[in-house]
Image (cartoon, rainbow, N blue to C red):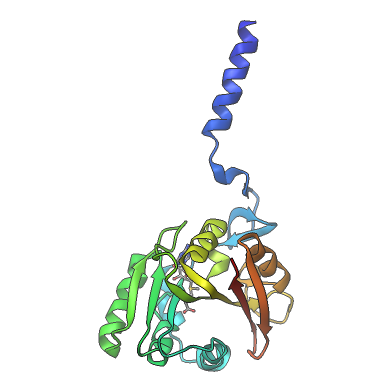
Length: 235
Ligand SMILES: C[S@@+](CC[C@H](N)C(=O)[O-])C[C@H]1O[C@@H](n2cnc3c(N)ncnc32)[C@H](O)[C@@H]1O
C-alpha cells in the first residue's frame, strides 16, 4: 500500500515538474551539427547565427542573391504601416522598409543585444528615425498586442528555439487581418546551396503556421533561391 501511494505521488510530481514544452518539442542527443537537437513538428531547429557573423548579413552580394527590393514590393506596404521585422539582425530589411512607411514604423526585434547594438549604430549613421529596436526573448517578440500590420521574418524563423510560442506571440501582436511573411531558402530544391536546417519547404512552413491559426494567402516565387510565404490573421 505504502509503495503504491509513493508511486502515485512520484508520478504526480514527475508530471507537474515536466516543462510544458516537453509535449511540443522532442530533444535528441544524436543530431545535425548545425542544429540544436530540438525537434518541432519533425523539423530540427537550426543554431542561431551569432552576432559575430553580422558582417555576412550586410555583404554586398546579397542584393543579387536575395533581391531585397522584390521582397519589399511583395509586402504591399502603406505609408502608415506598422511592421515588425522579427529576427532583424543588423536591420538589413528594417532600414530598407522604413523609408517606405514614413508615417508608420518598424519594430526591429532580435534576441541578441549585440545585434541590436549594431542596428542602433546603423540607425544613427543612416539617420532613420522610424526604426525601433526591441529586445525579444526566446519565447516572445515583446511587442504590444494588436499593434502590428505586418510581421516579417527573413532567414530567421528556422532558428527560433521556441517557434510555437514565438508565432503565438506574433499573432497576438498583429491587428485583425494583419499579415505574417516568411522568407526562407527553398527546402524543396537540393541545388539551393544552403545548409539543410537553414532551408524550409513550403509544406513545413504551412503546417507550422496553421498551428497558430494563421491562414495561408499565397507564395511568391520571384526570388532566385527563397520563397516568400504570406499568411493572414483571421480571427
Ligand atoms: C540569419 S539572421 C537574419 C537577420 C535578418 N533577418 C536579415 O535577413 O538580415 C537571424 C536572426 O534571428 C535572430 N533570432 C533568433 N531567434 C530569435 C527569436 N526567438 N526572436 C527574435 N530574433 C531571433 C538571431 O539573433 C539573428 O539575428
